[in-house]
Image (cartoon, rainbow, N blue to C red; front, top):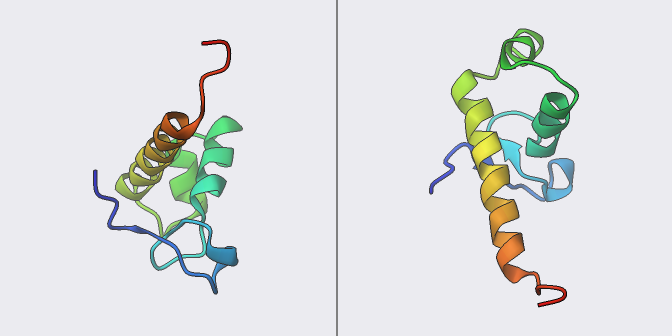
Length: 77
């Protein structure tokens, strides 16, 4: 899966994955969603974002977690 709008830049937020053209990190989007914010609320508060960008950030996070899971050893197996 491709994430063309998710980038890393060591000079921005210490290299955290961010939405291109912003200083909004993927983990910040996750925190907002975990706190119960709806996509519509996020869009209202951050007009530079689109629903597609938010969904791309969520998909990126899911892919990163899936890849980490593959690298973890299974305990008790």
